[in-house]
Image (cartoon, rainbow, N blue to C red; front, side, top):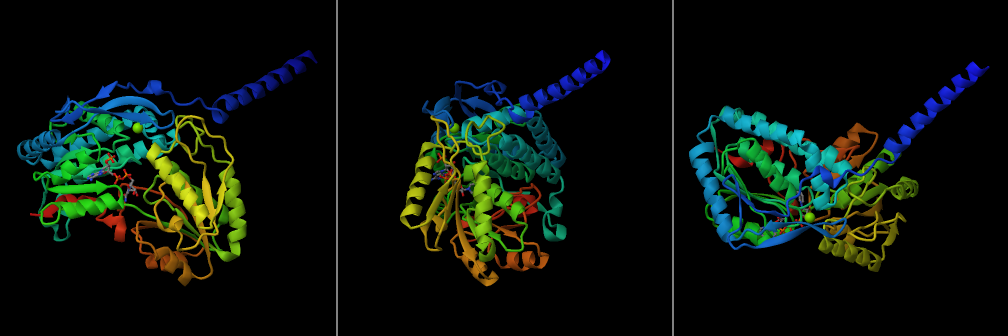
Length: 501
Ligand code: NAP
Ligand code: MG
């Protein structure tokens, strides 16, 4: 009897300890800690392989948008600094990088990829602190994908003769000026630097003003990998620093990712010059749900399409189109799922939606919420708690939206979804294409034939079928119309850094 009792007590305690394990780890994981990152109080420019003070001695602050606290001071590069960076990139191109056997160039890029993989945790925490994105995303998407881009393009470095039809010989362009936004800071740096280096170019890169820290940390990896000085230079600053790169006569190619307005300005600034240009700009992408789609799966795709990275995603599925016969059911399912989303501390592994990147971006989103209501759309926001400090927007859905509404035409770049209904394929294709943008789209249906016929009619650079926001270094990405020109990723992303010799 006593034996039995002790057996059952043992069994009970085993169950208890399993439960305790579950509670303390799976259900309430501790937030990632800022201790994983060694932050300096101030950061200099990375020019000619060294961290260098800015010529005018000016610094700006970068904040943590979840706390509104300053993380560090960052050097502001003026035209003098940009000039030094371009000169260094030119020297490195002429004397080292263009002379080096392609196989050796590839080894450096592989080394960068491997070190980034090893230091992934530190980069993920810093990315979430500087930009506000949930650690789950920076840990599983941003940083691994950035490393994957370096791995992928490293493989191209000694195979460039296979890049162009007819195996014609190719050569690099020279010095590439690269300007990136704040929504995927390290990933955008990788999208730009990796193909440029693989093709044999050298680089001057400018990160966004609100998220410069992971690009500067990447410079530490360049030092660690012994990348020859000047092959990549990183100049931090605001719009004027970007403009100085664009205007510099020593730049052979500009690669810009950012807003359509600035992209158009850059295009104008380069008229009459021999500088090559690729632009990755804004979007207002349609996510189309047909009545034969697996609706629960589609709901997950809608959530991922718009709430991933707080909706700060150029290809966000921000315009939802639902076939009328299932619209009522889909709205209920979607709203129920939205209520489960947790908004808050980006370093908490349970967080689904982190902080809005900056106060101006928060104000822009809030303005669009007012515009939507004024235009007559119906606003639904979840009731989740949000922290008192920091920049936050609850997941938002507008129904009763008309095609002419500004909220369904203009890029909001936040966790705000507009929903419209449709009856026929013709109607939804026409509505989906009726936008100045053409970056991405999603199609949800049980029928493969419908996937092919609808996606071939959509004027969008990327069309996902029964999924959304899936990225791979081997796949080209880019837009039509006001979403830009040129492609990044895959072989297509290598070509803008090469010319036929
Ligand atoms: P942005 O204001 O256009 O800024 C992009 C970059 O350009 C930043 O580094 C910015 O510096 C710099 N810049 C500002 N003015 C400049 C000028 N006159 N000349 C040269 N550079 C200048 O865009 P954002 O607000 O950072 O990013 C959001 C936009 O990027 C959205 O429209 C989004 O759709 C687009 N985006 C597109 C893709 C794509 O692949 N198609 C990917 C991601 C984002 P500051 O940071 O100091 O302003
Ligand atoms: Mg910041």
